[in-house]
Length: 220
Image 1 (cartoon, rainbow, N blue to C red):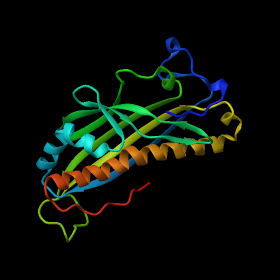
Image 2 (image 1 turned 180 degrees about the vertical axis):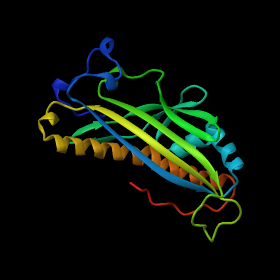
Image 3 (image 1 turned 90 degrees about the vertical axis):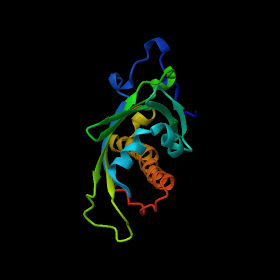
Image 4 (image 1 turned 120 degrees about the horizontal axis):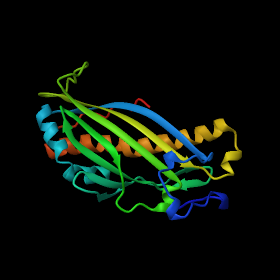
């Protein structure tokens, strides 16, 4: 973990630590975005659902090289990698819970870490809410190279990030500070969402000995 921060941004004592999203510190900035994408699977929806249900197999494989630790029966502690701007860097670890499907919809939500680092809780906070829905044979532009049934996995992600910035960054223009946070948010999304999506698609087809469709360009 590497952090570059000024003395004024030093964390509070562990007893005072709470979710950063509830902080009234003016140095805490909130950034939020919503993203959507489609993942194509060359198999019936029941086959795709069975694969997604057994996340204890594919999640670790597909999350690599990010560090993954089990967190209860349906959760994982995921270390995203190092991100930062203006010499300020964080290496966030968040808890994600993969909820069992409900009426064909899968949800991935933020869950509490079993042993969170109180000092890091004073620097960043992440809320991750994703929904995945299976749609069999719904492609508007059929792939001429595809054989058999095609299932589209449509997913949406709502992501909020709270960052306590060093006081020196607060001296910069607000627009510059906001763009810095937006850049950090895009890095997180690219790491945890887009790369994971590609790997899940490739892993599914490899484990089922099916040709993998070409990657779609991310809409963000």
